[in-house]
Image (cartoon, rainbow, N blue to C red; front, side):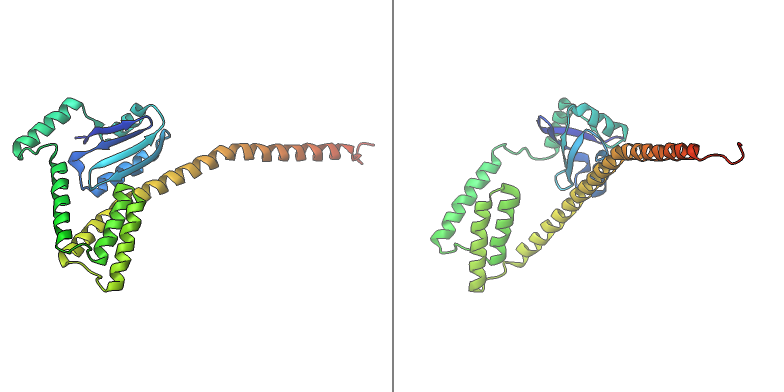
Length: 237
């Protein structure tokens, strides 16, 4: 059965698909990147096995790429109604969560941070702040916040507060292994796309070069024949 992909977000020339049934299955996303990178209408492809998402940057229309994916048994685009039905079936098996729960958690964490300030617990360990710097740059796209956390991390290094708790360090290690696997998939996709572009450029210039060499060779042959015609034949007299 072909996995079903749902359109999660779409802009002109860019779309993000989610394949919930293949989440965390790295070999599947590696195969998708390798196969679809060969499509001439695809400019860039990246995949995240951790979230089950595939991001495509393409030349219109998108239907040509999704049709190629279905033909190669990679995935097929599902209907919105099927996605909603899947969400309802998952909601029946799991407790229903409020759409605003993330904002509520953020508000609660903000309040706890203020409580820690009143108790004098302002700065964490160096590793904790450096991790926050990485997250601010990678997830939030905020280099200003990342620089601030790097400065705090270096300050904590000078104070000798290097490491956080064992649980925090193990969690950081687990996340970084996932990030490394995702980046490896993306690097393979870029390498395949670069090799395909180089092969296309070589093939496009090859016939022209061959025709030029052929024309040179033909010109040389005609010149040799004309020179040979000027040499008198001793047997003709």
